[in-house]
Length: 294
Image 1 (cartoon, one colour):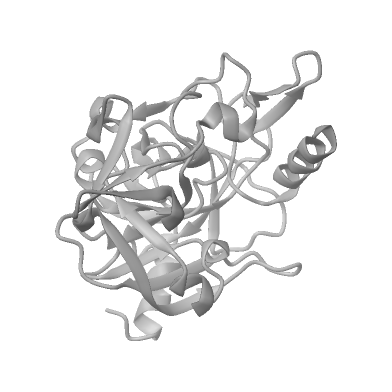
Image 2 (cartoon, helix red, strand yellow):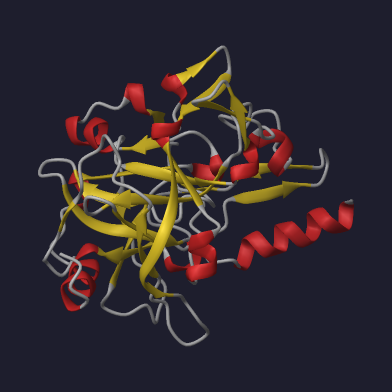
């Protein structure tokens, strides 16, 4: 068991998935979000959840059945949200009537698409008695992968665009930035996603960050409190609602506590550590235009 935990720790450290806390932990439940666009777009972001985790209950409701964050990730007692479920595998968001965008490493090919389930309204304020229930209208399958590029040894581009099996009943599509990203006022940015697979969290405070070398003009970098399973989270302007980017990679989120045999969050000051890598919304706009997806 110890060997397995050590190997998992090493994997998280090099996986390229976004994961860390900068300064204060700014993650909040959706019902505590103060921004109107944050609340609006909370209905436009879905979590990738294994279909085996959704147990049928009656004819039109499914119940979530997964481990807690604490049990799934072996977290120490003081870690926030540790008692919440660990269901999400990635984040994705609406960019058209039935069109979604996420990170490329979340959906590398059509096989991944065919076997993925995407769930809207995975959030604490929609739970009851500590249980999470979903209507059939919350649950969707991927029907077709329209575009994908995944990171490799020599490049970092990381984007997938796919169609759902039907158009969601609720949710507004994100309008995409057509600017380069270098002119973005980071004080106006917010993010939505599913850190560690937990129910949706909002982050309405981010800071600029000098990113690692070699990441190219398609990216900018932020100090923002994201974790593994946040991959594919939308980064948007709180004032205009415009999508400015997609979270695709980041630093290491946990440190191992040898004395207690559990994980504690990795805290950095704003501007320290690696920073979180954001693929620009303008790149997504170019890909959609080039592939006739508008």
